[in-house]
Length: 185
Ligand code: IMP
Ligand code: MG
Image (cartoon, rainbow, N blue to C red; front, side, top):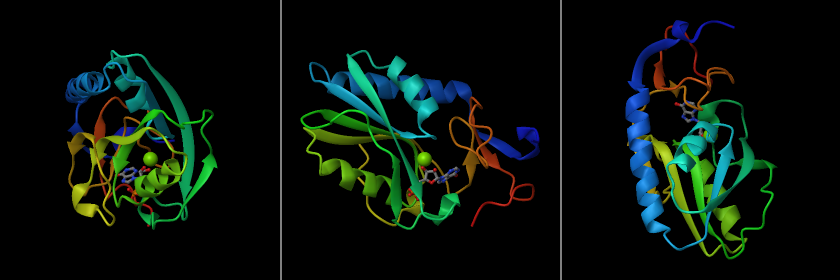
């Protein structure tokens, strides 16, 4: 496997900026869920880095759970509204205040279909927290309650987001050099 630097065009959001913003998000979430039961639901795999930093900035007691989905078609841009649940939550969410934690919202199909599924299980409340929002790529409306950064329509990686499953460990968000990496279609 090549070094990530072979694919990096530039750093879009550095480590310090990410952590500062995550601390702000954690503070707002802590205020909003004060004295309420909070259950964080993370969509694997991209959301893990964000979840683990975010939860350390949330000062109210809370629980976490994970689910995994896959879009039909393998490319990140192939999301066409069809998502398949590949790993379900462990816990029942009925009556709980669920906050969905996502790495990035692009077309919106993934989060829209996850929200539709979770709603059928009757949580007390259901909100969305995304680190990144590619707002001008949206195809379906999704309500976003907490957003880290609105970013331009560029293919990004690092901090949970992968290039063919690698480089999720990077502590920053980088943009991909299109001359070095062919984005999956
Ligand atoms: P949506 O259904 O189009 O909103 O797709 C969201 C999913 O596409 C995310 O959870 C990511 O897995 C993937 N994705 C979208 N844009 C990027 C990107 O720039 N880099 C890596 N993955 C991305
Ligand atoms: Mg994802």
